[in-house]
Length: 273
Image (cartoon, rainbow, N blue to C red; front, side, top):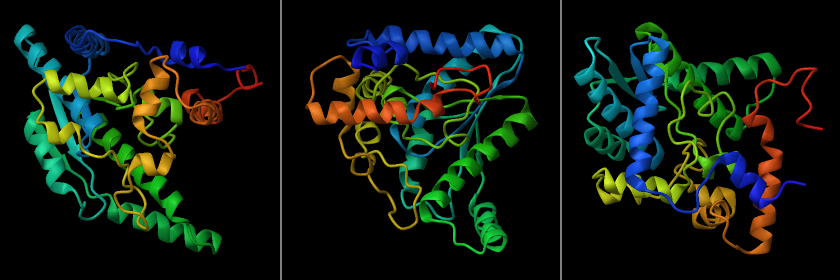
């Protein structure tokens, strides 16, 4: 039986953190791994939300230090990946200005997603649901990041963190795919603490989180989609007592989305039994 403590241990969440230590640890992690791979830097999609803003700032700080310490030049390519015109594009641009990445690249995913939508209908004589189309958007965004990363010999950075991992609130092989995940082990409120210390303007990390994937429900708040709040999720991950029904829902979601946290299953795997 999976328990709250099992989940906390697996996701490596601490009930309290030393914010400056966490910032330093994650910057050093980024520096060490990119040097180990021999690649040239990092690629990350910037959505305008808390998670990509935090990951992006950590990456740029790591690249700045790498370039001061090494003869080799490292780079950070921050990508905008809108589906047409993003409703909160101004927020995304504000986040980019705060991060101050060395390079900015924009790929409009709408033509590719719409082509996939059309070909799906032709192939199946069915209409792709808005939910599935949302996942297609997420996967197209990740494909574009890997295209750019391959071209410039860079690593793709992910924004997965504990509050996202416990709920499975991401697209498998979409925003769940990456080469390196510098936010692992943090919950949502801890990410806010890091951004605050890093001098991020408060509106950026207090913005209502939204995946903004579904055409029928633009900018749908994550908490509305999930059915509980990030404060409840964070309390659960910090080992605190929360409403029993919410704890049960979180544990159930964690079990249901275990496949998202695993490599493709093989005949020799037994974690799912």
